[in-house]
Image (cartoon, rainbow, N blue to C red):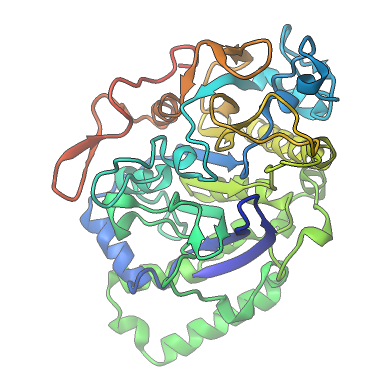
Length: 445
């Protein structure tokens, strides 16, 4: 597995989070990459060119300070931020999101997400389901389902790439796992207990930018293998695994130094203090996600910053929001300029919202009753506001939207009919991709 380390921080429950971008897998629960590729082939995976970028905001972002400001509420609820108009009449968002405000015609704002569970758990955001009463093996995440149904666009590029925090001894509630679909659909980001890592010859992201040195190392590796006659003795899947781990296409996707300097400047290079072990800078994750889907990945998930603001909510948001504003707006513009906006869906959300009442520490606490989401691309009908909350921002009063409805919409954008397509669980029982009765959002498709 090619491992690129990211920043380290801690949530309110005391568990640490650390971002890992892990492309490829040499060890996953004792299985090798060739075994995973062989399992995928046995599943009869097919081809497509649609993709999803999911931007998870770990910790639970404050919806009423970002996208649903309540200026008529009492001071202990409305907070200190002011709304600004967007380029869609009637839609206002936080003053610290000026770039996004100019792109609202390319986005969809949902103010009425319901059904969250209130735990620091990405499971619902990455599977569209509750983690309670799961079938044996567990529900698969979106990327694993796509790997099962559609397979790799290019054998040299993993169909599912994950950038997710690791919390102590556990990953984000197993949200990146393939569930009952099995290891053939596992994400190329293993970082849980018992899953071996390989940092390729000690190469960090900084060394990935050194193309000449990196390619020289790969060329030397290839020559050594060829001179020993090893490639002749490998089966198809070993050769495919070898190609994936040494493919210049995957490396080109990761090498953001190849980007036009103007594009890189638009995304931002981030604060060097946000680096850890040479990992990707905070802002560069957006650019890396675009490069990966353009190279052939079907699903890229990333965890951006930290939003668990039980104290100093507004001070923290003054730092977080401009970064999200720059990175997300750059991604949306980039997708449109490259003609990818019809094929690549983007979803931005967290595991729950925050309390209407500001606490004694100038923070907001967990609030699962309602939250927000942003959608873009995928050929959806954008420039819309969906749903509304009450005067205090605590309850959905118009068009409550369930997580599974968003998933049904994403599947629709990918050309997958949730009323017809199923995947078999461990007992061979066909399972629909979303909970019973949930459909693509009629407003968007």
